[in-house]
Length: 373
Image (cartoon, rainbow, N blue to C red):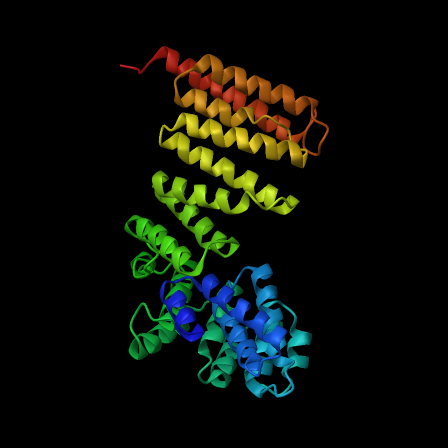
């Protein structure tokens, strides 16, 4: 199949990171071979970066802006390339750079004026200048926590008329509408959210299966991390600990070969989440296995090890109060002796461990008294 087919299918699977990865590979190959296809690939990466960037996540926006800037730097860069860059820079709170990138673009200039002094008149000016780019206006308003509900409804209605869900542009409009509805506490916010294919517990297992199909077709690797992390969190929030555990296992498998400090930190964090999912599933030996893997990482990072707190949670879940309290006490002793920030006798983490011990002792005593008649 062609690159276009693969990118389209990845987006239909609601996996923009996979589409991005496919374009990245093609981009690198085109640069290496000095292919004539390179400018088109650069522009396509820029368009995808804008469409799929996370609106209120500045690291994501900065990353997207770099890709958009590459298109604006092409020798034959168009006014549309510069307008995309100008708006991306405005979204990253760089109005001066935005104006320099697109000094003649009416929407960028209206956006800069509104950002400097937000007002209904400024919003109206942006809408007049937007033309087919109303989504940019809605994104900016949602990002800045400004009322956007009416415009978001208008955008969603236009997109729905053009193409029903799950068309990618319509899905983006829906997600912006849901964000605006929640921000303004609209009575239909929950109803709108349920239209998203990602919504609800019934979507969790299909999402996991879709990621598996993506991996089978396009290969595994770190480009799967964000979809898996989002799924694990959604499953945990929904109480589907089985899906959370399966997603967590794949996250750990992907992160394990990466020995950088950042990857080790991420792996330690997600092993803690995985252990919690195992505990909720009464898979106590698996939980302890995750804790043991985490202990080695914590030592490499210079963090207090072993993880007595999670071991205490396993013991409590098993009903072994003696082991639970013993593990909490060991955690307090370890934190008292540790020299890192937040530890030592007066450290905030040490205080937290002492609180956990006190709470566990209270739960033990309550359990010993039994239910009240």
